[in-house]
Length: 494
Image (cartoon, rainbow, N blue to C red; front, top):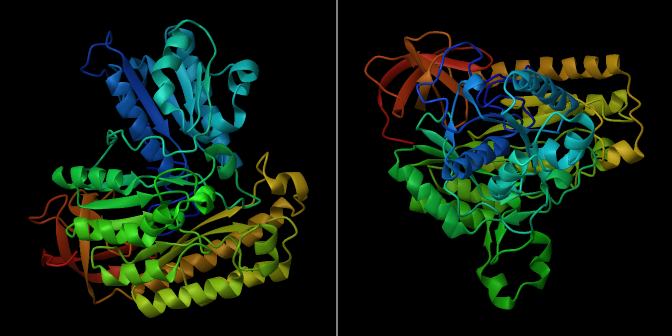
C-alpha cells in the first residue's frame, strides 16, 4: 500500500490514493489457464472503495471470473476510483492510459471504471474519452453481469443509478489481499452533510444504513474464519440509524414502533461488542457534528472497542468552517475533544485538514494551527485545497488562494503534525502495550508489525509469535510514526 505523503503514523482512513492490487507487469504468468475468465482490480481512495471492491470480487466470482494479480492475464480490468481530490483522478487517468496500451495488444480485453469517478463523469468516459468499456457507480455493482454482456456485444454499458437502500447487505465479500486478521464491514452508505468542498453526496447519494442482523451475521462469519479485528465503515458512521430500511432523512415519517425500536450507532457498537467480545472493533469515519456522548460512553464501557477515533475537522477557523458548511464550531469541537479525553484518557485521535480553502486568511490559518496545538493529534491526513467540479464551493466560491500560499500553509500544518506525532509516540516509552500482529515489518523480515488499540504501528522481534497473535510489547524507543519494542508474552487483554 502506498502511503500518502501527508499522512503520519497510521493507515489513512480517508482521501488516500492506494492501489489495492497493483498486480505484476512482468512476464510472470498465473498458474491458472489463460482461457479462464480472469479479472484484475485496483482500488483508490477511502476504505469504502476497498470494501466495495470485495463486493465486486464476490459478484464476479459468481459469474465464473477468477481474480488474477497478473495484469497481462486478465480478460477484465477494473479500477475502483476516487474523486475526492484532483490528484486522485489524475492517478486513475494515468492507469487507464496504461490499460488502454495493453488493450491495443489484446482486443478482447475489457476495461471498467467503478466508484466515484464513474458516478461523477458517467457517459463522458464512453462518449468523449473512450478509455473504458464499462462504467459502474457505487450502488450498481449487482448489475455488472448485465453490463459485461452489453460490453461484449459492443453496446453502451453504463449504470450509475444511486439507491435509496443499503445495496449489498446480502453479499458475502471476497477478502482481497487479506491478511486473515483484519477486515472491513460496511454499515452505512452515502452522506447528507453537503460540505461545500466534497463530492461524496453527489457520487454516493443520501445516507442509508444496513440491517444490524446482516452486520452481525457478517462479523460472526469473520470470527469463525479466524479474524481478530473488524472496522465498521461508512462515510459517516455516527449517522448510522436502522429503523427498518430507507433513507435517514425519511426517519421523520417512521411509525411509533419504528422509532421505539430504531438502532443508533451507539446501540450497534454495543451489539457488536457483546456478540464478539474477543474481536477488536474499530470504526471510521466520524463527523464531529454527529458523534454523540453515547458513542463515547459505549467506547469506554467495552474493552474490545479500540481507543481510537478518526475525527476530521478540516479547519480550525469558525469563518472557514461556516463556508465549508461544517455544522460544528471550533468551540464545539473542543468540547467534543474534552469529552473524549475525560471518558477515554488514552484515546488516540486523528484528523483531516485542508489548507488554503477559498478566502482563508493568515488568521484563519493560525486558528488551524492553534486548534492542532490544543488537540495534539496522534496523526493526520493533510491536503491543499483542490476545487472539485460540481461542489458548491466550485460553483459559488472563487479559489483565490495562490498555490505557493497553499503549499506553505500545508507544510506548516505537516511540520506541526510531525511534532505532535512524535510527542504522542514518546508517551509510550517504557510502557507495555497490546499489539495485534498483522504482517512482517517492511524494514526487516526479522520483525513483526502490528497496531495497538490506539492504531499506532509497533514493531518487535518475531521470536515464537505469529500473525494474528495479540502480544504484550514493552516499548523501548519510538519514531514519530512507529513504536519499537520487545515482546514479553501473549497478551491477556485485547
